[in-house]
Image 1 (spheres, helix red, strand yellow):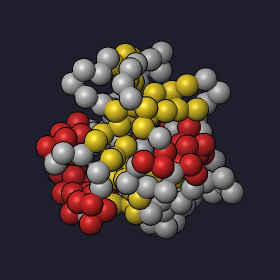
Image 2 (cartoon, rainbow, N blue to C red):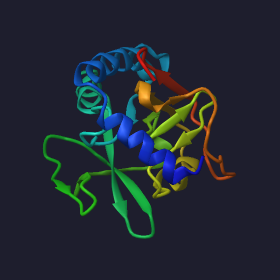
Image 3 (cartoon, rainbow, N blue to C red):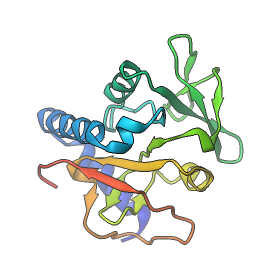
Length: 183
């Protein structure tokens, strides 16, 4: 299946997921993430400020902060690049033209500093393959970090094998956490 069609199908599946099912699956994923030894050992983590379609990342951010971890979120830059800025109570946030919430200030965390990166995407295969949103931002960023790369896949985002073309530049994730429920 081509990537554009699969992206649209996955977006529709996520949008039509019943709220109670999404909430239950999300709770399973938060618990699975926090049970990872890499989470417990991590001092600096990267995640996103989620959209309403995605798994909510606010509970991840809150748990990381409560555990004394440094949290950073992405800011898009020209030429499909991004930087991760430390997220604090003083961080100024702005909604971009794409509807994403991003930091406008704060200390930039270098790629080598991340212990764990919660990687977003639309579809994830069991072997660590990832279908992103199509901008290529993470494909450019992930090769620059050695942090543990993990995805949290809601049922609509899970695949045993990739049904999309996997490119040479695609970085495999170290783990794809899944939640039980209908696919």
